[in-house]
Length: 302
Image (cartoon, rainbow, N blue to C red; front, side):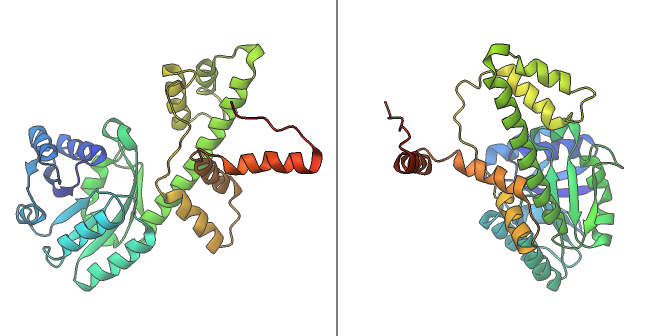
């Protein structure tokens, strides 16, 4: 089967390689010519533009978009919509907001095009391990592209599936990422408590390795945490600054809109925002408050 791939960042490039290894034909394009050249070395057909990519595919065409969410995705989808023909399919494998996905799906459907949203998890490990894919959109369109999803998944019958109509794939991935925030925060807090118990001289990586077998908290995320602790036990050289891709924010907003209490996910998002406050004005003000009402000492900056 053949597929167009737009976006050859690390994840898009790895997905391209995985498809090629499975025997599929991939026509790849990217804003960076050297990224396209690398894909061609791996066996892909290169294209210098969306127009050239579409012309190199046979109808009914399928084009996978793997670019940053927001304006980049909007521009690529609009560009493809102007070039593709009725019956063709666009797959958005990025982290788009599901509300944008629903809107785009309706717009493309009016033009006779299929729009599938594929929430994709797996990161840099996807090339070797396969990707978890939550697909939303027309069932017949998903079924036609089954060989593509089976090749990218951990196994043909595991790690992927159509979860519902347009928007549901990105919605499901959004919630997945919100859960991920909470799990990461719990591991981080737990290991910090262990690290602070200095008199026990605990080896955090060793403890993590114990938990990897038989423990109820064993998981791939724990495996990655153990890797990080083994490589850098004291986290030297790493700034306490944690970014977010936006999906945690969207998850919290959705919880509010649906009247669903989600304190763990919400706290994990707030903790990330807190990590970026270099001035920590709120902490300074809290210390001043304690001094005002209780005469508690204020620790001066050096």
